[in-house]
Amino acid sequence: MREHVTLKGGNTGSMNTRHLFFWLLLIPLLSACAGAKKSVITEAVPAAPPPHKIEQKEQTPPALYYNFLMAQMCRSRGDAEGAIKHYNLALSFDPESPVLLFDTASLYLQSGKLEEALQACLKIVQRDPAHLHAHILLAGIYSTLQNKEAAIEEYTTILRQAPDYDEVYVYLNNLYLESGDYKRAKENMRAYARLQPDSPVPYYYLGRIYAQEEDVRSAEKYYRKALEREPGHEASLMDLAALYEQRREFDKAAAAYRDVLAYDPQQAGAQGHLAQLYLQEGKLEEALEQYRQLDEVLIDNDQVRLRMALILMEQKKYDSAIEILGSIAGRDPGNDKARYFLGLAYEGGKDWERCIAELEKIGPGSEMYTEARMHMAYVYEEQGNLDKAIEITRGALKEKADDIALYRLLASLLERAKRYEEGIAVLQKALEIDRESEDVHFLLGVLYEKAVKLEDSISAMEKVLQINPENADALNYIGYTYAEQGINLDQAEELVKKALRLKPRDGYIIDSLGWVYFKKGDYKKAVRHLEEAAEYAAEDPLIKEHLGDAYLKADLKDRALEMYEKALALEPGNDELKKKIETLRGSRFD
Picture (spheres, rainbow, N blue to C red):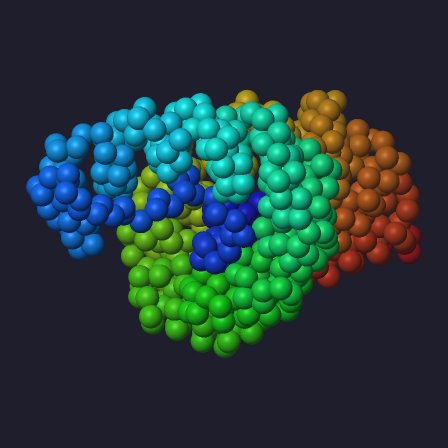
């Protein structure tokens, strides 16, 4: 059969797990991520030493010393430009002074004048190749200028002079990874491990290198080595958890996040990730508790509290959700996402008036406007006010004339009002915006069929298949339509079988195949497939009616009567079913 088709666009409709979980997974926890701590320093430029001092000697020109002191005074006040001016005046008396050049280079770097900083540093190392801090500044400047090879050369020079300079190994590692040079990255970190065999840091970075190479087993091995040296090494635990998530080993990932929290109960990143894992596993109470703990760390964080509210809504604890969402919207009236869900929470509590009032506050400039208007239309439709639902949707289209979802919703509402021609016109207007919209062509086919324009319906469905040959619903729709008409039955069988390969457990498609066999007169196959369809779609009266028809043709009258009666119980107003039951009951006594 043709599965019942909803023409609603977007995430409208009453609250359900799929709808709320969509938003739970979509809302980012930016603050939680920001709360994660780093166990090692990874900046591109190591910290520069404090400004140098120059003692005035007899041979020191007074003007040089005066400008040097003025430069230091400007620097202490945060006046970088004034300091640079006085350093340059001092340099006019001693152009080769490494002290003056280095302090000037540091200020140039702080001021973003990279080229001037670079030239000052080059002068220093030309005069004194062993000037370690100048090489450090040079490496940072080259990194900032994206001259990776020059930066690597400078860091290598630093390690030749100071092989125990730990941070440089990390900076080198980052540069090698950015260049895709995994071999040198591993050699560099192994050298660091030889220097610091008891430190977790080199093993942690080896794990990251292997993870970037997608060598998951080796990555896990080195993260474990890091944790052998420091069981609570946060970065290793976090990366190991992410690795397990990638492998869909969620129990191991959760255990790793819990290990992080055992060492640091306020680690926001671990709390957020663990809560998300609980959500994916459907453990709502555990997720909620984790978000509550996170809310104590990130006080009044709207993203965290919004997730808490969505979970409470999923648990049907609408009053608690309303309290949280109301506080967010009260503190930040522009938070339309919170206001949207506040409206839905009122809906869950059957407070339709407040639901509509909150949704109406969301204006056309908001990213939530379409969702809000569509949900308002849904609420009015549920209350039996179809005309108001149509009015709301038409009004939204005046504000968002290019929103395909609104056209789809309006067509749906017009279909429910049996105003098929108007619905067709709406969808044709939508096709002026997007002629290749698979959904719009499909829905247009549905409305053509309702308007008894079967050729147009088939043409629309064929257009869907031109856009996407794997659209199982369109394949099924055409196949079932042919079966209903008793035409092209071999082609109908082929189309429905292809649809079934794409959706093997779809009761409606299985019903279509059974109906094709029924029309072909193969009642044995028809019964077998229709019985299977009735198992997958137990609450659909038409499938039960089809099965009753097949039983009747297979001369199984008692089963046919039983199935008709079950169908009528699901659809009490079906006069055709009543006639079939009366006829069958009468024939049993003939």
